[in-house]
Length: 113
Image (cartoon, rainbow, N blue to C red):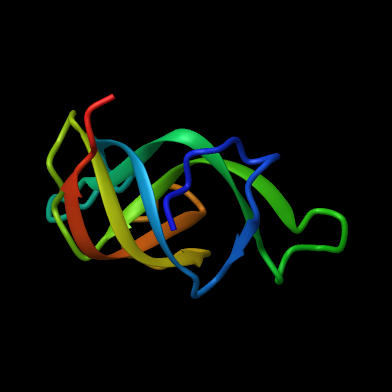
C-alpha cells in the first residue's frame, strides 16, 4: 500500500505492517564517537504517515512521522525512491537515528510526477 496521503487522512500503521513508503534517502552522520561507527540512512517521506506505537502512554500512541530509519540496505541517495518493507518502532539498530524504521525488502525508483 503506497502512503501518499497526509497522515491525518491515512490509516494508522503499527509495528510489523508491511508498507511502501516514498521519499528521499539521506545519510545522517553517526552520533557516536567510536571510529568504527557507521552513518545511519533515513528516508525523508514525501508525505507524513501515522504510526501507532502500542508501547507509548495512552493518548500519545499516534504520531505524525516524517522520517524513518532505513534498515538492512544502502539506498539510492538524494533521489526519490519507494521502499517496501516491515515498519518497526523503537531502537532497532546500533546506529539509531529516528524512532520509526523500515526493514527494507525492496527498493525502486519513485514514479515520475
